[in-house]
Length: 381
Image (cartoon, rainbow, N blue to C red; front, side, top):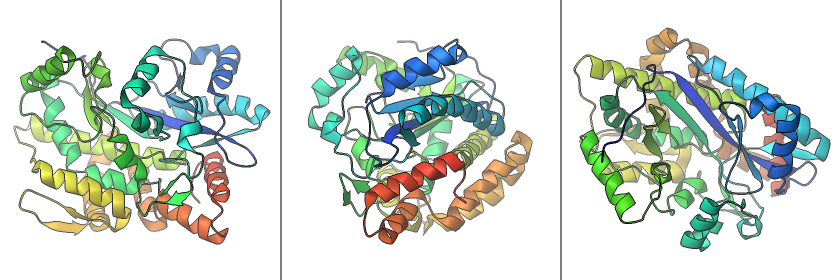
């Protein structure tokens, strides 16, 4: 089969931010997404027009904010802030707070109602217990590619930085009230779904087309967007989509991840334009890196290359940020890329959650309410 790849301007950016709806006082998940969306669209009809800015997701406790296509991370952040303000104008009146992390620390997954749509019903029917566990939230970043032949090499480039994104965003240490010992429980939970998890890496676009054809022919998927890889090409948009990250609690952190993604994609694009090649690690190294980052977060020692060289992820991140600084100036995201350093200084979400839990005698309600407060504040402080 032939899969067309839409025309895009190189290194444009769009972002998606999944938010949980929680009770203002106790922090429990509340399944009021349909009411929130109805009120938001009634009061802000512009958010429902063209590219719908607020989406409903698998669970009734979730809404997703979606930006338009932008040239800079700052523009995408402003877009998210505008949509969030509209959503908050509704949720504030009904006693609901907005919360985003890789998982909710204590609300039982089995008690969360699923959105009444055929595709979600089919997913749950097929995946059963695992599907009903998907009380998880993430941040997705789309970066435009100016030609199809860049899609798979750029995917390879982002896969090399999989553990960096995982460690920076890790924010799901708790599951059903229990500390899992992992920095990101979400990373290991989400990969249980069919076609989710690490991407297959193909040398040619024709190989990707053959894979999609096989998945459709055997009934694994009904549509190409049911390929839920952590990093994937999105042909209908002409983008590469980075889906590695756990939910992030502040707009500042979302912008930092957006800038790092945009800069790495632009760097890979320039290498390809100059006739260079992107190094590819063996899949067993890639798989191990994902596990190490999910388990240890910013304390992970990661594998850097096919030769098996290793380094602490935070040390390699500092080197990467220094290397990307000129590109960030070209893209107008120098400030947002520096915000990655803020995560390194303060710690990631999983570390913050554990500190708050310890300060409050293990009360995970305090964790949710503190993360909700930081989201309202817009930055970790």
